Amino acid sequence: MMPLTMARTGERNQIKRIGGREETRRFLESLGFVTGSAVTVVSQISGNLIVNIKESRVAVSREMANKIYI
Image (cartoon, rainbow, N blue to C red; front, side, top):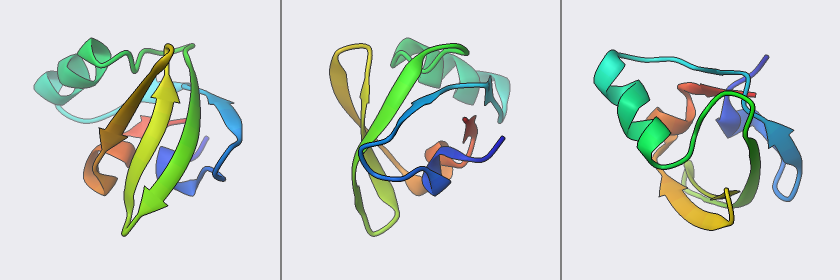
């Protein structure tokens, strides 16, 4: 298991765990980041990620991406 920030661009991964405080987990779940979902990093700009999740593109900060484990 590793944080999403370690994923290679274009590589499809599966979310294994969401860490962080309860409100952080709920926020990420509302964006589609749930255990078992497929996630692909589209690009990385100064640590912040743009990812494809559930047919949508979502931008997440480095801090949030570090709480998503693949």
